[in-house]
Image (cartoon, rainbow, N blue to C red; front, side, top):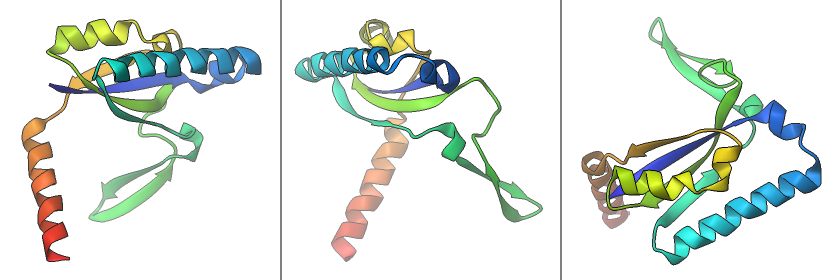
Length: 131
C-alpha cells in the first residue's frame, strides 16, 4: 500500500539551529531515506519552501481569493512530503518512527486514496494519447 507522510517543522526553531547541526540533521534524514530506498519503501518525496512563501486560495462570494501564507496559523508548518510503500499502516508507522525527521517535527501518515489516484492516472494516460 502507498502512504503519504507529511512532515511538519517549526521553521523558527529550525532556523535557530547552528548551520553545522542543521546539515548533520539533514544528512541523517537523507541516509534514512536511502535505507528506505534500499528496502523498496521510498517512492518519492518533495521538500517544501518556507510557509512564508505560500499562498492559499479560497472561494469567497463565488470568487477566488488569494491570501499570503499557509492555510492555518500554526508554529509547525508542512515542510515536506514523503511517499512510502508499506504492507499496512502499522508497517508505515514502524518505518517512519525511525526517520530522523521526527526529531524536527511530527509526521502525519495517511493511506493514499488509490481509487482516486487510479482515476487521475487514467486521465493522464488519456491526455497523453490525445496529444
